[in-house]
Image (cartoon, rainbow, N blue to C red):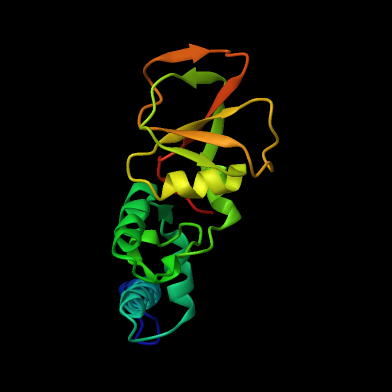
Length: 216
C-alpha cells in the first residue's frame, strides 16, 4: 500500500468514535433535562406543601383565638363568627323558675342580669316585656276546674299575674269582653288538658306556652 494512502479502517474507526461521542453527548443532554424536570417537580411539591401547611397554621390560629375570645381574654373578628354560630335558646321554664324564686323572696331583679333568662324577653318586678305576650295563645275551649284564684284586670294584667303564680298554666276569660277591659275576670288554671269543653259559647282559655325556643 502506498504510504500516502489513508487506511480505510482508520476512517471507519474515527467515524465510529465520533458517533459514539455524539451519542454520549446526547444521552448526557437527556439526563440533564430529566434531572431538571425532577428538580422542578420537587420544587413545585415543596411549594404546595408549604402553602398547605401555612393555611392549616392560620386556620388553627383562628380557632385558638376564637376559643380564647370566648373566655374573655382576647377580642377579634373570629369571636363574632363563633358567637353567631351558637344557637341562642330561651329556656322558658328555667327563666320562669328563677323569676318566681325572686318574686317569692320579694327580691328586686332584672331578667337580663339572670343567666337562666339569657335570650328571653325582659321582665323585672314591675315590667313585663311585650314579647312575653307572644308566649300565650287563646284556645277555643273552657276548663271547668280552677285553682280557686280569680283575678280582675285586662288581658296583660291577667297574663302577668298568672305568670307569677307557680301553679298557673293559663286562665279562662269571657269571650264577650275586650282584652283591654280592666274589669274582666280571669280564672286561673293549673291544668288545661282535662275537663275541656270545646267551642264554648261564652268562655275561652288563654294558655302559657312553656316550650323553649330559638332566638334569631
